[in-house]
Length: 395
Image (cartoon, rainbow, N blue to C red; front, side):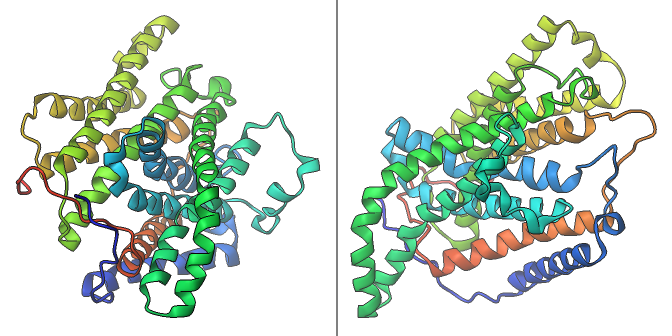
């Protein structure tokens, strides 16, 4: 039997949490400096490299790792796999935080962030042929959808608060919310499908400036598949983290099945990339002793290792699941990072390496997300205790 979601509780300001807050504070202070001093003084961006770490990592990689809610929703609502229901709230929370901070990263990266409000509002000025517009509108809408999908956790908190006024308010809101959630959930599946594939389409616009190893017409499909794989990996990572950090029980059968689905996706990506290279006649480039070829092989090794681990492990352990998820997440991270930065060559004379403030901001945003996640799961009913079906220990 599955237990209902409930707040973790406990002391929030632990020594480790204070360290996380310190890192987050450094990141926030750097963000303030960026807005005060401007992009030129705080970044290594240029006309050749108008985007850098904040886009390649915080947005392109960050939103893929935040696709856990999208990936679990596909299993739960499209394929009707009800056994994954205990994972949906924490997955949606991770997605909501990840996408919200990705939106913040965009605001930090653009030159005039105070004009971003025009994107969703001034519809009559939209360039409907712009893939970047589609990405921007979809991500903005998806952030709203994710926080609406988390509203039941807030209502549960009101119902459990012991305050009669809050309980009655939750009872009034819940029927309308329950009727709307089916449409909100459908929108929550559609939007990531659109913008994750469009992130791949975006790099096709760079034409010959993108290295042939990554420059394939199937880039939108590969970006969509890797986002699903990385979303599943993030769910496994988050669940094992919660199990170890908060002492929650875990269902290794469910986690193992999720990791198998992710491994299948990784195998499809690797196989398709080699077929695509052969069909385009550029297979020889991956056997050259240069940086793009080396990174290509590292990407594929990181994708293949989880496949081999899933295929060979008859007894699934929490440790093996954790390592497999980390490898898969790293593989997807490197693939997307290489596509947007390493594989992109604007021409002779242009170079890019992230500045210290860029790195501090990215690390700070990760710390903000982690601090917010811990605070929310300790306060709101997000995590569920599920029956452990296979006794094991972290190996």
